[in-house]
Length: 390
Length: 217
Image (cartoon, rainbow over all chains, first blue to last red; front, side, top):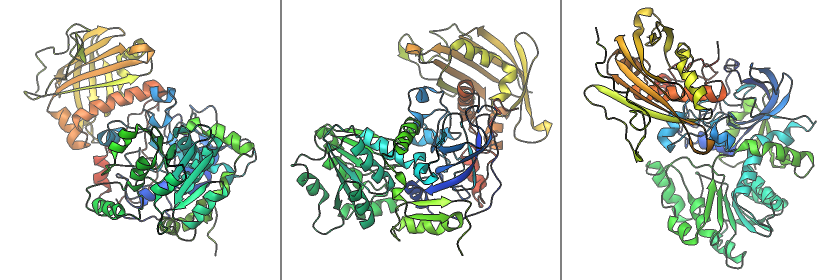
């Protein structure tokens, strides 16, 4: 845990292990903000030698005997959550709660009470599956998850159907937006961007975006959001949200930051100290602020990842205002097809968030740049077959 | 040489007084506590599928190696008896644990109870199949009892699986196989160097135990 070391290595190619497996030759893959939680050691049971990556797409190379909907040569986007399609949770369309895809379910049961679905490249607790920042990947339940792309849309326009576009969309859906609502979004990284865009699609009249990175705030304004830079002197986010809503607060708040929140307030230091002393595992500064900010009877939607124990969460405020909280890993399979249709109709081009296009060899260095928010990085896409530029 | 269990702990009538049952006359029944060298484990799973089919799948004991960890062979030896072979993790046959088992109760679609009748281990168990409310599937509940001995120590020392956890994992494999036709697995898959503590972690995560083959040949 916490060694922050990523390397590009040559390992054997994956093989079919189960009847519903497919092997995908990856054509484009990406680094996700949530990969940084792994990089920084916030997610337990990530081990030396694990292959990272859960946002990828490619060409079907080989399918198992039980896969009858895909064939060699099909172009697919793969959801980051693995779902069997047959258990009680999949039947309820709670795909990320699938019962049958985590071989290490007992680890998650010990930590969380029950196990969610397996995820690609996201720790042994979440299944220990090799990820897709690679040239090839094994995809279990390929009869259920992968979305076929039959149009000639370029990879970059559909790649983000693998995680962050559906994740941002589900965040907006979970925010229970009604026509004319004001929605506040913390974090203008990729998920925050798609949450903003989706909030407008679902009827929000105003979206207020909160971040400190100038290019991300600029990007949020470019799709219609009002921005608040919390790092500016004299800016109080809570006051700003009151000022922008006639004193009642946003109807919905979206925490697209999660467990590694930064804060300009004293509590930011408090969380750094407590996590360093292992008295707390997550830094919930945004969660605290969003609970405080949301209007009476409003909704808090949390697509940002949390992993463990949180300290000083103002639950009394949540109760006192009667708010609703909705959260969790994305039920990917509900959103991929409808969102592909929106892309095909030209309603959105998700590639607008891409800032860097790199090779696999350049990935280790980019992890560091992404973590440190340098070089105006907003989203990194990897072509795993490209040669490193001289 | 070990001796067979003298009592029949799981052979009572269903449904209300079943030893595996979670409910008795509307009250929750906790599982039996470990004592006198007996280890008990009760585990339950909600499985999509009807009780009759799940009962039949369980009853097909010669197919148990498809979903039970480390069971390498089950052979029927009579109408109610069978011979079981479990690998204790080694390559050689002499590391196998073998025992005979007899069925004590067999109620189609509802319940199966069994016990060992000689061999390297003493164990007894019961599985019950009950329809969940509102057509939501079948509750499958397993109660397994065994003595510390070769069986338990094989699980614990050879592969690092807590013996109670092995029973829980076997029901999980049964559910996955019944619902999807396969058992989720990650071995073997590509990875980088695991480093010096990699083996220890693998054991801790239960990744040293071979996942049963499911429908793979």
